[in-house]
Length: 343
Image (cartoon, rainbow, N blue to C red; front, top):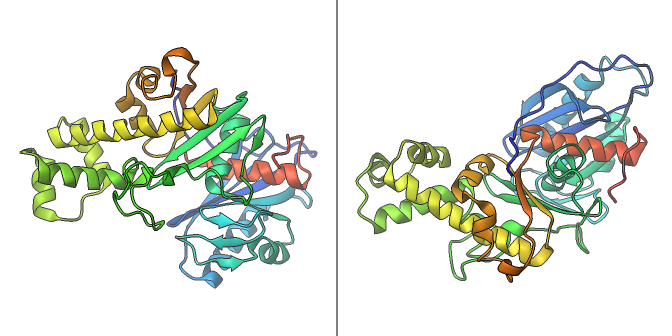
């Protein structure tokens, strides 16, 4: 049964003198969002800034965010900072190896910023941060084996086993968006061809719509725009067209649902989870396109007619999931309120 996805509202900071807070910062390619987070995952004082293009400007902007968040807090109230980063980290999560939309390359971000801020800093992959938040405070709560899939510009994923994040031997698992589903298919920025996120993501919608428009006899507004403009159409335009009943938009969203079902069936085969949580900008639409998720998965999953299938749900925390998870992990590492450690 799907659960609604929505941002948690910001709340007043508790006045209890024993309150311990942590800071979560979600660093995206376009925007930085930081907030104070308490032990129950409540978000306080959200601050947003545009993401700069240079290392110095990025470090400086993050410093401004942190300084504004701690400015009115008594000494010792904030126990640490968690940074959710869309990129590859080293196994100990101290160094950003590479982030496609950020200027950090092989940079010991945690150490540098901890020295600058006077607060301990933990780095975590953004998908792991969101997955941990949904496990601790959202739709994946209580899962023994839970997979959280974020569907937006690309696909991110987190795997939680018995209350711990699984990162693999080198700290980069699970890259579900880069499973090859079409050998020799669409080129992916990762360097491969045919990755799942090239067929099942917000950016993939435009490619699918364009291919269908060129191959088929579509006469609706979306097809006319694609043929005339050859650019300028984005994923939300395809979704809006489908909502308006445009034939090309409807068929594109059906294809999206087909690929998502294929991807989720692979998740079921490999991990055998008891729940799959869908987050991100395309999550709600994903549920609508899949319809009866259990029915769509059953013929695609190995032995699907003779095995239990996971409960597929919508995330509950919306855009705040990444910063909540990063803050919660920082609290666990640096001595905040009682939290189950996540490795």
